[in-house]
Image (tube, rainbow, N blue to C red; front, side, top):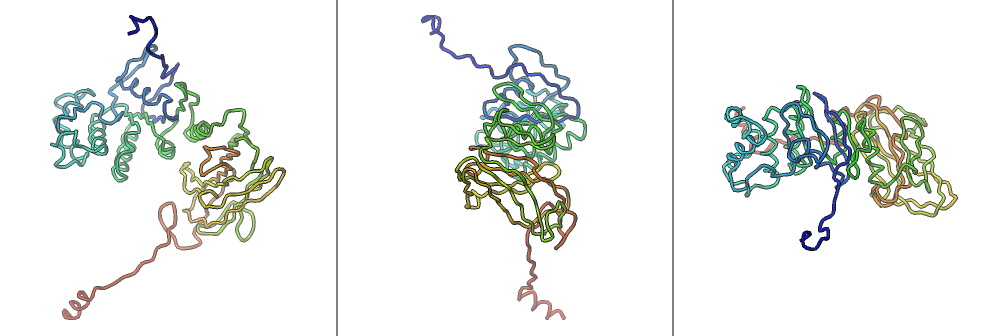
Length: 386
């Protein structure tokens, strides 16, 4: 049609522009970005599914992983037959396939469905098969896209455990996920993509904060860094001046597990506004342990122009001993993505120094009651035996 009319019938779109990074052996890099930023295109280029229009990609060894669900599968073939086809596509030899076939099937947990056509599989079953093949291909680099998100929780944990073991053996990982916690836990550093460009390359925590600013629509002109370790940004028409934590003895930064504390946000406003006030507690690994805001609680906060107000949260610190940070925010609705007035990351740090109530294992305390009941028939049996 273009040849006949002389008019362009297409629009040129640059998915990636001037991307440059290296991935070392044993290193895990996370890739963050909004939808359409170029994350999946980057993985396809690295894996060899797509060829770059310009530039050079240097690979050293076999690269496997999970891209889009169903990539490399023939829906008419059974899962068993697709193992042979897909494994060949990623470079496995016939001997390797035969040697690892039973392990691949066992890891996928597909059971009798392994001999059913893949077109009858759910998205979770396709993910199981794809991951099982890729992780057993003995790669030097493993690529993981958002495909893991379709699996059930137990199988996701199984996959992440296998990925960590792969990394501990010296394998390299390129990991794309909107799950910020998993990026922080798994990756040594992270790239943030926007409109096909890398706008940040550094530590996962710093990358996460840059990502939060990006999705909140906050540009550099609205940033207001308090110091080198704290990130503070937003429109600042309503802002938080100070954050304190206090128990019954007063303001402090060391508390006992289960102890009741009051978090106070000292705020001022240059506008009349009804906003959501939020708090977020993270552990020393950067994992989000607990967060809430007044929108979720059904109690929006009211601010008046030129006014000064204290906002207080009272809560028990039912967390395991360790060091934590407290992030605070003012925004519209239930997330800071909408009309972010002030996001102050790590506004306060505190430590849970020990247990004041019942000890527990894990991250958080949950009230538990235990009862023992002997069924009537069991009691009668014990009596007859005696």
